[in-house]
Image 1 (cartoon, helix red, strand yellow):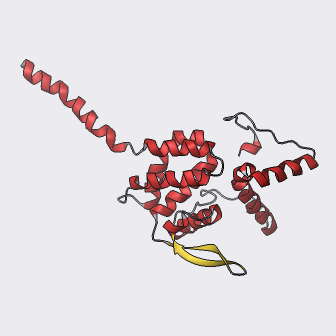
Image 2: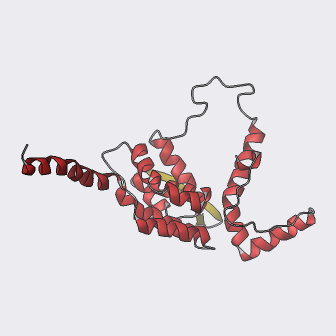
Image 3: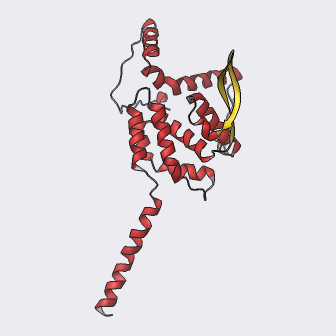
Length: 220
């Protein structure tokens, strides 16, 4: 083998690696910046997370089934979500889901004379609505496109198979409160009311060091 032939043979694998690498990189550094800002934001957390989802949406691959295209983009920001937290990831995924299925009709609640009324909008419009409307619309989209989380995973359910109706209502109420808790704590009015209520029950509210992990049943 001549020196010229040997040089070409050695160079070929290096070229193949250089071409293949960028194809799997879906991460946009600007999205990561927004997620980091959302984690430290006060009243703008929701807005920052929405903006991050919109900026990430062009990476959605229409050639993939909708569930897989969303998962591919979300996985690109795994490290960012580890730092930003579960609440921000949840909102990001919901907003991205609405953007991935932008033309799906969803029911939302809007302010109307004498209270609230239900109306239908496109999923993409629900991204800019209240957190409750955004999350509820994302659930409707998942149901409509067969992406709803399956319970049980094929295993035989234990008895009792499900909580009673009143218990399930309490679980839903608690989950909704927990999702909104960061916003309540950062609100100038609600924060004071929460602190006062806790003091009345003999508790105090202290801010833990960022990144502290709660271990045990409460972390589930």
